[in-house]
Length: 112
Image (cartoon, rainbow, N blue to C red; front, side, top):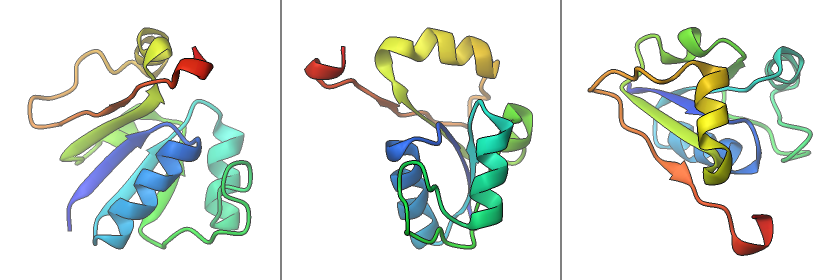
């Protein structure tokens, strides 16, 4: 089983996490708010973005970037591109290991 870190607990981060878990991966979602991560873990859903959708057991959430990256083969940044620098600073992700790969969501024109 491959371990994946998904940075961002919004709609895209949650959707990517579900796809990764359904493909047989262990997923750790990392958000900026500890209370949101705790709610995701306790309720097994992301009620803010995917209400009523049960998250696979292979997904858990944290607000600790180091915990999310520990043992991860892939790191996915699912935050809007226009806030990438700020999110990298907040999440202290400037030094991802070479073995970790990243994808970034680009904002739609109406989101800019």
